[in-house]
Image 1 (cartoon, rainbow, N blue to C red):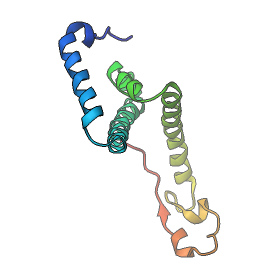
Image 2: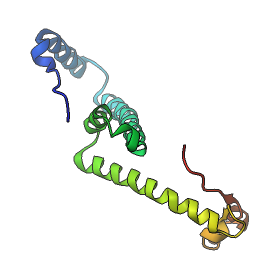
Image 3: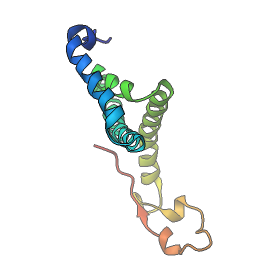
Length: 142
């Protein structure tokens, strides 16, 4: 359940008008359009990733957090409907595969370390077998 949000245009119309005037000025007199678009895209990436990480943490600890409205609202502002669903599915899959990885690790020869020889195909031409001899440990996340 989401709390009703404050309407900025109704609460402070003069402030919002001033913001729009600054925006219009920047569009007419500010940096060239390509630079503005690049900065906007980068700012969205940074805030979008932050929102995705907040949502990941909320769903990872859902038993404790119950996916709070603040986390949902943050990610909802940054992602389209299908993006939010895709991210939530990804988080769920990662969390569901974690126990399987732990069980695989315990059942593997050597009792705890899964080697790439157990999990990977032989090296492709041009790659050394040394790259495929590293041990990989599956550890549960805190």
